[in-house]
Image (cartoon, rainbow, N blue to C red; front, top):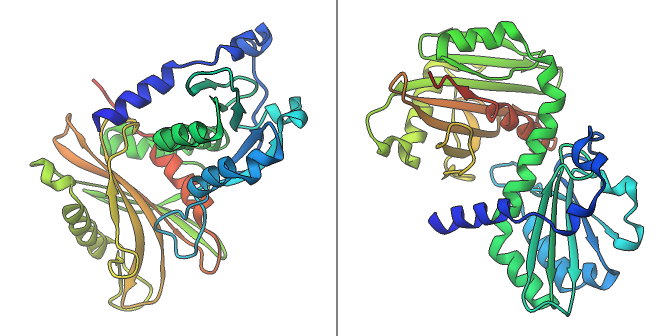
Length: 336
């Protein structure tokens, strides 16, 4: 964990020297809104050989790996490609840019990064190396950092769309009940309001989305381990989230897609346990993906869990889950 944090700090502080030559309007003035599809990265290479060979294979092996916890295989990102000869102003407005450069004059690889360079929100990562082998090596060493950066720009772009439609009635209820701020866009409604549990839903003709917010007393760090997180989740959902059939209720899928826990370093509360997996109904046949974040609230002495889930049978769900995940990242604790 220490090594990862050091890499993150190094990456964030290593700004592109070549980018500093851009004009003042791009640096200071208001940026155009960035372009590109959801979770799409535009890879800029010097030639087709880089994209079709070892470098492209390395990029694809990481960014096209399946997103864990989805019922149908879906890659964590989408990749598009262009050579630098066609990298015009239009393409420079893409929100997520990965630029490949081989420069034999270098002694070792250099990684340069910039935020909101040609548009906003935007993340530009440029990896320059003396040869393709060293390029792939530095990519492998720091790929998780690159993913974190591109994930953030995806959330930022989603929130530029969702934040203006914030439902103040729902967010005020969250503030009164839980003591923190959070964005909930229009179209959602409060389905259940219990002393330790909120169920916020959006129901459409073919699909539905939901957010759970629940609290439990915080006793020790063992509560942030996988087995404890799943046990508390199952207990709360059995109590508060019934299914359509008599006696059915929501629970955690544990056999085919067992839940996994991680501890992201950039969650807004400073520390959180991310739980990712599949929900299902005990006593029925509905299922779908979920992601949750559990963190201690020092002001109340509770553990707080924010969870988003999707129900959309026979359709891709990654983008919908990402929208909910972006809302979960909008939480702001009352520091006072």
